Image: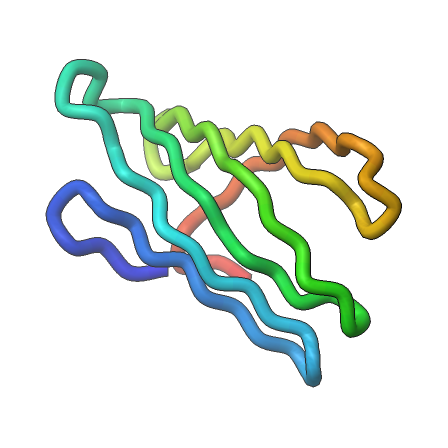
Length: 84
């Protein structure tokens, strides 16, 4: 993940799978942001949305996307930049 002003650029690659997207942090609510991404997973191209809240060094990330069968998927994760 890289930061350019209020934009977080997210990239990941492992074998044939990859993900890239951008999160735009809010001007009005500086500890939150929204973004979109593309994800190649097992040969299927998926698209999704991120909602992000900053808590100290951690990002609480809510992800919404459709799987390859067009079922909606909702999940939440904690990202700590700089940690694998």
